[in-house]
Length: 256
Image 1 (cartoon, rainbow, N blue to C red):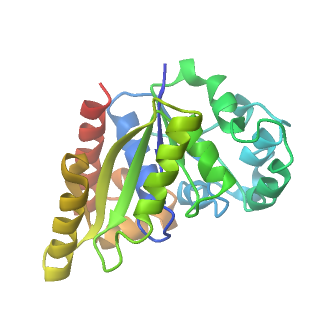
Image 2 (cartoon, one colour):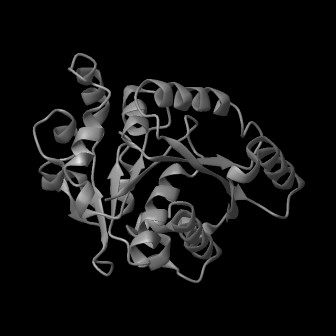
């Protein structure tokens, strides 16, 4: 049965989608059948894996409205990696969220959808929106674990307390087994004092929940989505690729 990991942070630009894509890629590379669910209306995980949104017949929009089963919309995410799959989305997911507000059991729609495919995968990775929204809450309720990317820049921890409070509320109300899998320091630049200071602050705040792996600022990481592939296929010898490969090892260890 799949372990479900939601990658979340209410702040944008922290490397959430980059982490979702590349963690899913390397889990699959390590032999784990992995499904990446693009649950962010921006749809960057979908386009970042080379999928043309204009050609999609059904997406997460249809799943959330009950007009398609999750299994029906899943695509192979990488032709060279037969264990890597994606459930794509399009910007209309933002409109779907408004419609969901009046739906029965609106907080558990994603959880119920994932339940239909959970036995088919080892891991399900959910790329959630950069906000505390109805979609984000669906992602938390559907998850076994939360993975929190935090950039090593000024204001890094701003809003994190609110996110953790939301996690605790979800845990108390609907998902008592929800755990914080770990905090991932992203955009780390060892050449600057600021990055080192912020990383030290993150470790002081989260202690042993911080992953040993840090994700560096890396041009190749930024370039990979424009080529429609994960970093492991674009440049497997880059610093970014090595970091996400190491992160996948840590995730495997923490989810044993």
